[in-house]
Length: 204
Image (cartoon, rainbow, N blue to C red; front, top):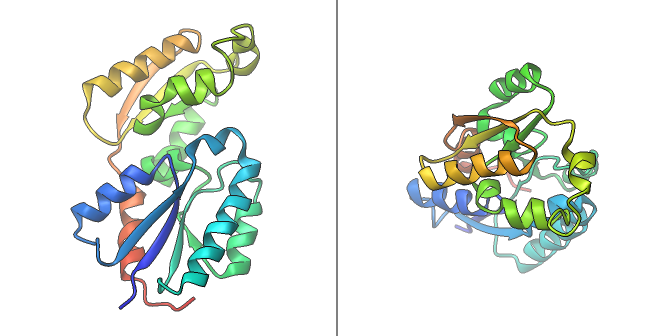
């Protein structure tokens, strides 16, 4: 039987592989990813995804293709493409929601609108993706303009890791001394998505 393929964001690729290995699904699922830095330029996501899907279909290697992306700032374009192609993606507007769970994240969002969220990946790569990605290292005067409306940083942790906790706290300080909260979410709904992708029987 042919395996299924998940085309995911680079920000969750490691987690996808971890879940696949933990559930013994290596023969059922393969993962390929697009650059995580594209969250800073979401207009690149759809063309890159389209290219990956086209190549995967042309290869004839896969039974089904799943999309490991939320909307991720594409303004609904990603969903329209997925619907046109008859594909399926993980639920939610972004990875914060599916890690925390849709209901839990909605409650966090309502509690404090001015919240900046981190995951393990974003905590680990905060300097490269946020500070350097938005050129705050060379233009620190942009910080109040871009992040001045935030009051809190919430770290949605996938694993227990004191070093990542330290990096997340450091990120809160670098964004202007935001208040800090940490919630251990595990992999949340991402695990369910992976298992459903492995068990899929619907032909594309």
